[in-house]
Length: 507
Ligand SMILES: Cc1cc2nc3c(=O)[nH]c(=O)nc-3n(C[C@H](O)[C@H](O)[C@H](O)COP(=O)(O)OP(=O)(O)OC[C@H]3O[C@@H](n4cnc5c(N)ncnc54)[C@H](O)[C@@H]3O)c2cc1C
Ligand code: SF4
Image (cartoon, rainbow, N blue to C red; front, side, top):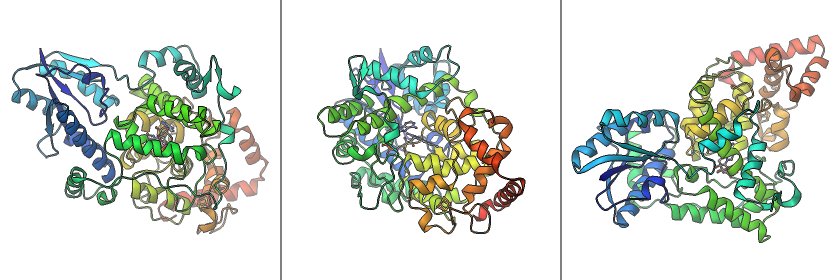
């Protein structure tokens, strides 16, 4: 039986399940479709990345002798279903479809209808590029009241043997997070990540994106990310050699005019299949065993991949589709327009949004403690915030974006993912960055014209959510501080916050 093998835009891995048994008569279908390119207003660089990486992957498959039917982006190819039907019509000898399960719920639901709609057999294969399969996560989650990442992560360490000595964690400790919260002094210089110049294929995609998506965020011509597995692996090995050693120490640090610091900038490659999670973690484990990097760096990095990344994916599939509807803190405020243009007097927000606009990237602490924290404190609408994160980052796919936004940043799941909201005043931002020195606002002030907006909004957040959050053990100290303030001070702070919320658009 000759089959059609459908490869999705985030399935660009030679070891993909559906590519393991390709026969000479089979046809591989890859399509740049309207529905996928437009379901949110993706950043221009994200579209360039995915389309160019798809075209390069198709080229490699052809060079390996496979028959590839590639459909370039046109207004005529509206959906994956339509692309599939059109391809079956062109190749009448094909009598079945093979596809690896989609990473996102929305798309998986669409694929699940293909068999009935096409009236042909469809083989749906498991995506085993993830280390924990659905069954493994479900078994771990079964019977637990709380799904804490740390315990899942320990299971994954045991399962993979990464940074393990027999049954014990290397260094006698599972987690070195406490060592990973240093400020980054000016004299510490982070090397630039390794960039790629666009080749002819990428150049064509850049032109396409300029023409078809002119209103989307970003400038397609500034594209310099890797678009092949080989280039992505080289960029990652460069990170291991030059940046990983300091990744742990400065993981939470932020600095004016340094977008990347010691981060790997590899999520976008990993999420579309150019990099393999096991291979990356083995390289990092090896670098530690060969004494090239300290343990807090290697452990910190591996935890992000086999811990956080696998955990959010497991949680997403465990809790969808109802997860998407959650809004525990009942927030409804509209997203201020500076999330789209970056013009605000708040220096920290300028930096985080500016990086995002320029690179379709910002590192975790920007996403969590600047744009995410602001959205949490200001009570921004969960769906609007989630759609923003899904659109503006090159690595954004719902399975990883949604738990991070709705669960981690906005506490909209009521504590399924995080044991407390990641709410912080300007104090935290001052401690971890040099933004406040260059800001229009004064971080030490809570009220008054020049007061840092994060301060009054922080107290207001605690006060307005006291019924829901007042009993949270990890917020007791914060609530005690709030209750110790006299009524006059509290009233003044709440009035300031109310004023800020009215003037949200002008901050
Ligand atoms: C509100 C919010 C939204 C986010 N949206 C996305 C998203 O759409 N796509 C995405 O890949 N990550 C997302 N993250 C997680 C994280 O911010 C990015 O993975 C990271 O910033 C990517 O940069 P990097 O490759 O330089 O990461 P590094 O700091 O170098 O970390 C190494 C790798 O670990 C993984 N990782 C680290 N933290 C997480 C995490 N919390 N969840 C899952 N994987 C993690 C990533 O694959 C990352 O490449 C989000 C975080 C927040 C707070
Ligand atoms: S003073 Fe406040 S708004 Fe300004 S950079 Fe610091 S935390 Fe951000």
